[in-house]
Image (tube, rainbow, N blue to C red; front, side):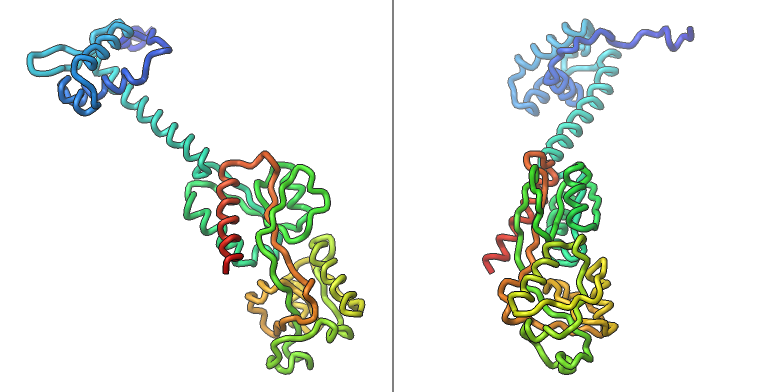
Length: 322
């Protein structure tokens, strides 16, 4: 065995596992100040109790930590070794405690967020994520875009913490679904369509589209909005002639721009600058609304997810007051 391995550690390796960390903090204060009186003032206790605590620590360790000098305290070799390690230990402990508290507050850790395509385009979702990032910049975030059914499955499988969805959830067992907002839906027409009046028209009655060819997002991807549009058309006195179904709303707008047909989309999607498409406000279809929901597992929400939910609720309440 080498001499290094045989050299004893400067203080006992049998440190009691129940040693009071407060004693280590007192010890570090005295070591840094080099004087009991100054250390006592720094800690906020009287000098005699501090002296007693240092002697208690020495008894527990079985070593002398300080040489008592006429005008101060000087570390022994054992004290120097303990000082270096104790300061690092307490610094790490303080960091760990701060991290644990930040995780409990939702300010550290991880969060996985999902949203449907149309939800991802809504400024409300952007605002929620922006507010959350400002409040919790140290949280690692992953995002997933998919349809409502797949997002709900991911929530149940614990691959996601939260999901912004459009459609009602058929089987919501084990999940909490909260409505964040409800927005109007609008008609999207090719800009050269006669009903668009070369972009001059601003609104149109839903029944005026009765003879048009409709482009819809596939029902499995958005059953709620699909069924809402069909029901609104029936209420307006006609069954829409669906000639094309697209997987995504953006594909729907591309087909509208190509002159394939017309579409009904959430109003927030008018922010998409689709060249060759004109958006018209729909009249005579009060029931034609597009809700935006926040879904998460009931009773199993992480601290970070709870913080994002709080940001969403605050923004949702602010919208309702306007």
